[in-house]
Length: 347
Image (cartoon, rainbow, N blue to C red):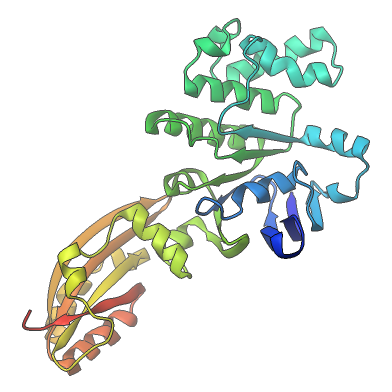
């Protein structure tokens, strides 16, 4: 449904050029909810604004529903944009128009007859839970209600694609949850393809089928959401996951850790259990079969959509040969093993 081919965006030229988006490929199939996550300034907003050509790419091609937007004339592009709805962090409602009038605005600009406008707006108000707010003005609405108006307005032209630019960043956690549930409901009922950008891992976990990680203007990792949360492939992906799960060694231990093993050290490991390994008694088997002590520093279990992820930070204490055997044992099972550092055995 959405396809970017070698799309890039550069501002300025020469030594002053800013490469906001480096050559990027992206494919979002019909009916999917695809997230793009990254730090501020990573290129998220530039990428999503290139999809509907609010930012025209410096190079590459953009396809939506099989049509190459980058090859269209201005008039044809304006018509094609009717098939691409967009919502923003700050809602962008017109304060002088009621809820009904805000939702109806795109239809008015398209020249739709007044009677048809009412027939099309009313179901959207019902879908977004705004039937009792149609005569209210934005100043009378909460943040969540304003975003619902923005969503209804984006759906007015019956788009096949919905772009979400940090759509929940200005909302409190409870309201964010309700908006995400609404987007999932819209995706399910209308078969709408959704591309969203966010810096919030909770959003990705809650709603997305697939996620891309962007850094320095380039997509550095893409995966199904379950795979991304259980086994990120990049250092930045692991950093996002660790920050989300809040699972890091205690500061006192970090101060004692060193990068390289020594004759009298033992390792501190981060273990990610996934799939069937979550339910297996691997630690008790490890201590029995490899004759090592395991000091568990932190542990938690997280549900990621239909998957369960178990995480643990632990010290493996024993002789060097037994620790090597323990690491081999752990690596032989369906879990991710990361040695964070080493501490003195007599510390």
